[in-house]
Image 1 (cartoon, rainbow, N blue to C red):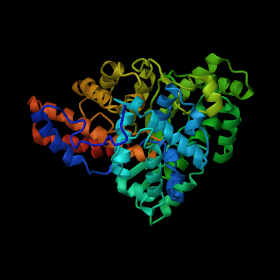
Image 2 (spheres, helix red, strand yellow):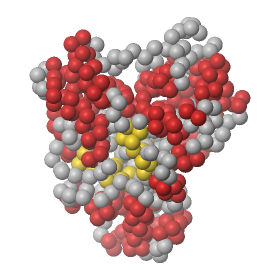
Image 3 (tube, rainbow, N blue to C red):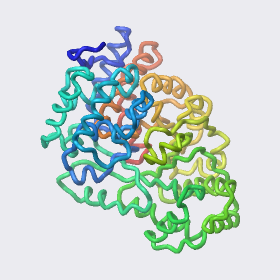
Image 4 (cartoon, one colour):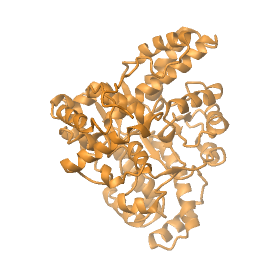
Length: 473
């Protein structure tokens, strides 16, 4: 059993290679990038959080409820999601305390996971916690974190500055007015850069519930008649322009597959009319969605928005949970994903276009060396996105470097993506990536496959140069 006095220690060499010689090299590399700014070009923190700059309410609402990495594993251990605050706007004091108790009581289930690494880092480096959480000290830790959250130094903007975030991208609906982004950009007292990301998935897929109503709303905010296919395309183009005017640099796409099969314009128009009328077949809806992903690439060539594709998640795998708690609550499950044939139509048309930056992410690591690295190693438009979601873990990141580097090198990769709603986990996630990458570079130096000065240059490129270049920051 874990005692109440078990220490929570962060070893300064955590995640660095165990071999003393390699560790010394990796330590030097890590020290050179440890304090570089955080560039987060894909994430899910709400811009309103930083605009309002209100104190965080309680430890559970900050550290537990928004982090599906935490809640899904607790759910697997028998803790009801409602107890953890999932899908709820707010918790009472007693409810928040009970949610925190569940985390501490089940602390052992996080052993060996990146979640444990992030939580240890958050508790130690942000809140000064030096004891390992347990059922016995849960209330004491809750009270100590709550006391911190009452101080001005723990408000969102203060933490944003403390974390060293230079750029934070949000993920936004095309109909969003982006008022929070506009006001943050105009606020000279806020030193950060918070930019929106165009996420049009629900408007491209006629099989999605409420698609016709969503398209109607899109036309209304764009000021465009969406009665025909040409008007619908024009509405999407107009909203992309609006996002660019408000600082957007990328458009994000997360369908279940990456297929980009083209349709004749007449067929796309016919299916569009049928979808508005509610008579399109399932096969027609899929064909339309795949064609529209190709259209999104064409638009990126025209307006310069970086195109990110992260397919391969079967959303809402547990329908009962989806109905009760909504999307993004921990039950999206990866599926096998194919890219080489799927993206051939897109790359045949636009793969050499100078305006297109196409960043390919995956939840299927079997494609890293077989498909993604070869694609990025030929097409000037293609970059391999860093491991994310279920793969943003130390061992997976090492496997990623092993699989991708020999074919695509370092320059054809995106830089780390934290992809998080859990605000306080951002620095821990980026620090993890820096440590693991420095360990990988140290191995290349030790094997005389890279000179030390090149390793230092590469470490910096992975942290700041690549994301700035790939995401046009």
